[in-house]
Image (tube, one colour):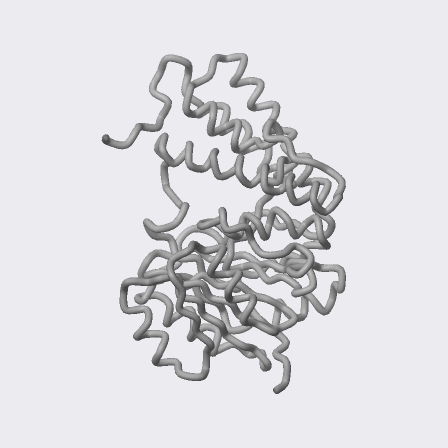
Length: 316
């Protein structure tokens, strides 16, 4: 059998109401030689029935619930394409997504990862907000990541494709990334090769209560994000050390982490000024205008010591 040029890897958990649109968007692609692999991570809804309707047009693996990292790892093991494109079951793609991705890899043999913007959408599929990420980063990002504790205007899972040779070099996603497995991809692959960014929104990111997006973060979500960022920094440093790669990450350089910490406890005038200055020079945001705007806005909105921090603990 002919080896497919691209493998599309869909991870699904209880998204029976969405997974059909994700698969259909891949079947509608303008690119030949594509295999579709869906790993269902122990769904308890009607996902199984939905997936079975596609017959031999897709490969399906049903496994016990182990988390997103395990689902993606299992999908990669079943795949054979030279390019691996990831798609969350609640998102979907534009028809030219794969052709544009393949062209970007062909144009830059040193690229380990190619990504594009995503158009946020409501649960019913209606577009909302501007495409994300706003700032695009290309080329060798390894130095930028060592200066920002690994943070950059990164893409999410459904916008990411990687070269198989880079996957083989990086190895499986650690199973500790039960959610937000894309944090491993965007944190590790910039140390393995160039990053190529496509400006068009070639996919749609569905916003609903089961993902990280929140209009306003409460204290519990802030602490969850901080724990996640700390775990990513630790995992990245372990990888860099094990592979004898230069550079290490320092959480004190992680501006969003420092801002989240300040939101929880409140700040005095001196600390507010310090955070504003750090934001102005934060290496994670390459766009000067956005960096200045975000730094000043963030410092202005931080709560004062002894006042309501703007977040609330969930009811116990």
